[in-house]
Length: 361
Ligand code: AMP
Ligand code: AMP
Image (cartoon, rainbow, N blue to C red; front, side, top):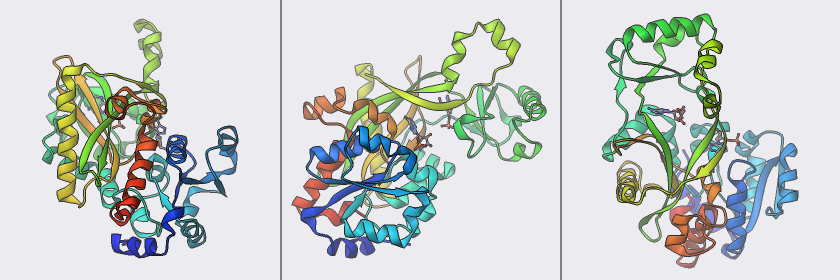
């Protein structure tokens, strides 16, 4: 396993005056690169040929390293190149989507702005729930067996891309009836019955607050908020109910974009306490806790209860709605601060006070 000590040794050979900020060319890379450049860093983008157009049209990457596949990031040749360029990597959703957390923990010999152990906690649904529970957050109830279902429940499959095959039910009999239907329609297989995750469905609106945990300032900042634009679930309302029944639609949740949100102000204190508590618990589970951005995926019900159903212990693409500025970043920093820039500000400050080895690990 790669340790902070290993990365400290790598950093000893870095030229601190020439630190570059690097990431994979997708997800929130433009956000990250723009912020890095505004703070005076060089930028390095590991990118697929077909996506290079993005960095020609938005010239934010000083170095473009073309790869066939993102897994090349695990190879010694590319890593040596990145180390020679004094790169600190910023992990985002494509790191966890296309590489495993084991690979990130054991094979990525380049300093990374983020707690690798927490990415591991994040990847495991059980561990994630334990973390959020211990932080005192309200989670949707889970049921061990379909026979226990006593309220509106969402049935999830592990690793389902975009919620394919998810369905809702509100009793054991409804579960078995719908499951059989899903099997008949080949959306699920008989074997899936042992793999389903049964979670109380929190009926409400989705809110995704994004925070920045500063190890250097020892504080958690609320910086952005968004919600997702998901296909096909967000388009079902365009079809009259009678026709929905006729075509027997089953909503999936493939993210296509995001909207910014400003929250009812009286909800902010709880949202802030939740962020503080999640970091505090993370510090106990995996010191020094969350390094940099994280996001809680929540549903807020009509009695204003905030249910958290997931955490991302890294930058989420929803912060892209704040590129330039978000209201919450503005309240804290004034104009022109957003998640990508906040990351670069932290790295710059850490270099200045000689603490880079605490956050590039
Ligand atoms: P991509 O590089 O676009 O394939 O995305 C990598 C991972 O991040 C996938 O798991 C996506 O579902 C997720 N993702 C990408 N963009 C967004 C977005 N705008 N909002 C939420 N999740 C996203
Ligand atoms: P997931 O695969 O867990 O990210 O869930 C996909 C989508 O389903 C989320 O983006 C939410 O919109 C919705 N969702 C998941 N779990 C719940 C829940 N317990 N209550 C309400 N909505 C949920």
